[in-house]
Length: 167
Image 1: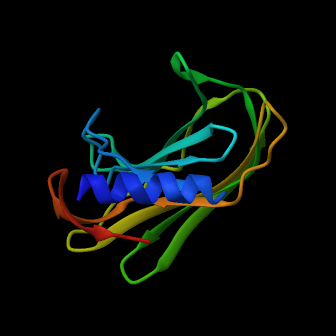
Image 2 (image 1 turned 180 degrees about the vertical axis):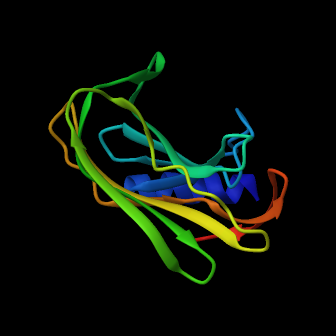
């Protein structure tokens, strides 16, 4: 299976398509954590991690960590990029929009953005969705890319149960 995926990734790159690679994101244990990486033909990389952040005191919020990288012969290195269009939305059961934040930032290639803390209701499920577009240091503007959390059902006492991917 890995060989087939690698072959498809090489073919997509040769044909000029953006390669999408979902990678495990086990660096921390935020509920709903999902990581996705997008790479263009110029070896610019946008890595996005979106999750729900539980403060341990009965509140949660959407959380994004994103970074722009460049794939070089020496490995992946950080690069500055302009965050042109960014929106993070948080949802409660059955698509009820709880809030949306948008921002523009040209100062860094590595951002952490968080929403507003909210009190969850037992038995309700929650998710966060991030949509972004960046301009890399080499002047190339990315397509709009989206990442989202897994649906997380709040069980009470700061306990969550993971469901399916929310986008």
